[in-house]
Image (cartoon, rainbow, N blue to C red; front, side, top):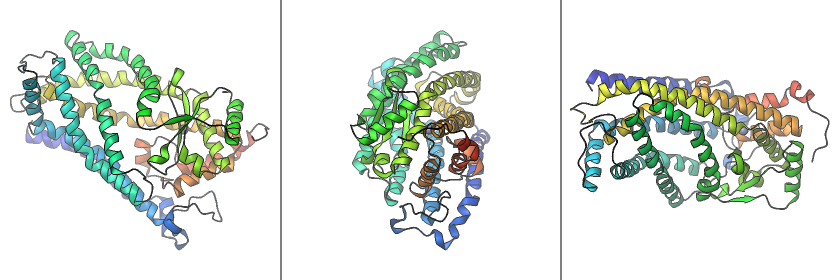
Length: 445
Ligand SMILES: [Zn+2]
């Protein structure tokens, strides 16, 4: 690649992020309130305090600093990952690792564009993903140090490293899939992407059945909600939501963090609502029920299925774009100077991942717009089912005051990465007269 081309690629990667960073530095109207002396942090700065207006987040100054650090780590981490992939190939390390992987299996590097042998692929990918893990380690440690400094993380360094090692081992499951795609490309260079598209939905369904049942328990424990007055109220709420047999599990999140959350995951036999034990420990009961009402909305409206379907459909567009990009990548990158012998050369894999990541990054606004729509629907369902308008609004205020989530993030960042409507929007929606007038008469559990 010539110097000019390198510059072009750098600009392609950097310009959107420089733009985002500039926008991030602009203060949003809500953040501007933080100069007020009345907003000083309470003791340790994290307990939510009732103010004259309980439905407007009152943020300690340290919340702003926390969010800036978080954003820097988040956006920097994306750039760092792209840069790492690019450097790995451009520095010649990828070619050296490929040669080493073939030497380990006593094979010679093929000159033709044939699919790599499985053993060489496993050895290359295993070592490459280990190097990638080490490359990302500083970012992970910076995130951990921030969470610890602000009193959110309870995760010892050893646990963090063990989680990373487990993630690396699970990632090796990509090897058979990669081997399959290489063969598919070899057999059908013009239609491989169509075949792969056809297989994506069953593959995603398989992952969403296995993930909650096999992978998640490697990191956390999940126990069915035990017998308690709270369980009775949650089951009554689930009954009213139309899911008398809802599977509700408690995750031992408190082992790692104080942050509060709940989510819906899995499909078919693995479908479940998961509540973090931190939510049970720290939320008032009405806010906890408001949170579960929202999650039941995802469950009842089968949002996991919609997400799966749109992911499978969208992946077709990504594969097609990738298919169209391949000749360009081959022409630009596979040459004597780079040492890459073709697109199926193992050493070209990080480069393909780099372009794949750029495509995924480009589709984030579409995927997140859909996510925000489903989150809004879950909010509406929760409010209709529980009637807990003020508790829902206070729950959102708590996310800002207790967990330091940004109630009103910069528009471009929200457009690109926002998976939920902003907290400010969700508070306004919960308190809107339109929602309140829609509540069916009911008795609260
Ligand atoms: Zn949700």
